[in-house]
Length: 375
Image (cartoon, rainbow, N blue to C red; front, top):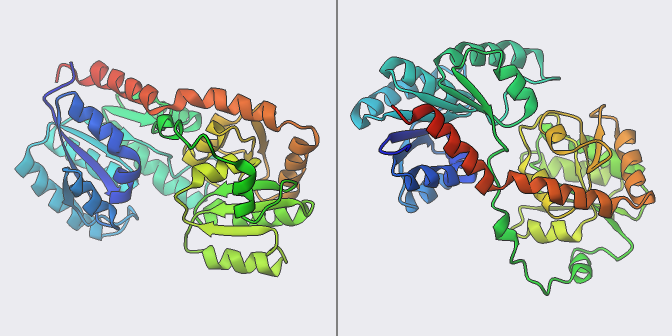
């Protein structure tokens, strides 16, 4: 049994651990292992992790791999490793992944590296392909287990020289937290509370306001659709105000609602009719998985991660030209004109169940047992 290990969970940022890794940490602990974390303090997440009783070491990582300040961070990590005497390293994110594998090489300890989405991918900028791909290829030699979350990354990783390469079903989602949504939920009343009528077709995006999420194209899509097609965005980010201004310039203020950060995204999904996602890059998008769970058809960019979840014509439509707003709007109209919402939504609800946290933790336990049981 995989037990009695002292594990260092290493991530570039504290929010990565808070948002994605806590169930995996709890699993390691439940198996009888001691777990500590090391990451940069980037927000409230660091303190929240400590409030949970986790030992979290602050290491001032910079998110850009070539930033020279990461040399200082590595020196601190080496001292931490000598003092704490870890027996296994589990790392993620580009900088955390490099640091973890440098430590493994130096101290001759096994390393698990989870790639939540390689920064090089089909359609990526040339610099990403040159820098990130060569870095990942080099450090794969010092990786005992390389874990990927989508087919494109898995196929690329198999060409590297990691000892073992696996693909798991994402980070795992706790679907049980949605099972007890108030049975008295009134969909039409909730839609009214958002300012929509029963005749409106609500198109939802849950995404940060960054260049990667491609809101410019999304707004052009809404502009191209009939007036009763309305758009809701949940999310914050550096381009939030700019996107609001762009919507205003397109005269979309009566059809677009930027709700910012919301704690009731699950209810908004239940009240929506279709999920729209036009990203340039994804690993395996959590927001889309949740939309699928709530039975929404999806129209999205045909990129890594998205196409792992959506089968063309089954759960929605994949758009090959990411900035071609006409293709998105035509697919959206097709969903409604052919009354495909229920059929596609049911398909999505069925297939997404295999991405549950229970299933992913079983996959992880098998990986631990296969590779580190004798160490």
